[in-house]
Length: 191
Image 1 (cartoon, helix red, strand yellow):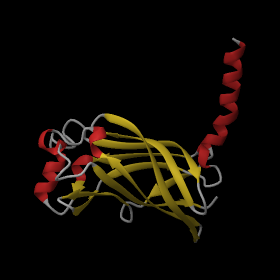
Image 2 (cartoon, helix red, strand yellow):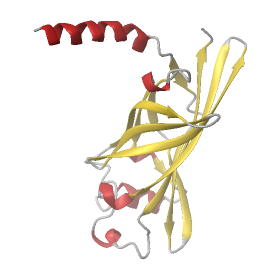
Image 3 (spheres, helix red, strand yellow):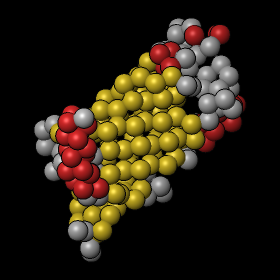
């Protein structure tokens, strides 16, 4: 019983600090969640045009910060309607059964200068695996508002998430490595 009381007191003591981590509003027109895959040695860039992001970040308290990004798989755009349909098909993302990809990080680690690593988990096609996303962050103040720009990328192996069934399991034409690229622009009022 004493242990539960101590845990409860510690929770109450940390709850206000967590609540004070500022929330950022994403500028979707300026932001991008994209990727580069390769086919027969040629880069194939693409992006997901619809996503939602809950960002709570304080560069002085990265360990208390968090991000939760939900990506609409059906919003994929590569410049080719046929390619987009293939990406959404059961052979790859299976967007009908798994309509959302999610990246959730409950902690950040500060690197040198303006670099950070979001330590999180990426869920795609019903599979969840840890992913560390390094990014560079610039925050500027402009007329009572803070504007943040985060640019980052990480390479993942698509087959780990089951993205590649049947003929798409063969990595001779489409390699296993896919580069995820993010540019998130977000704002919040100055405290």
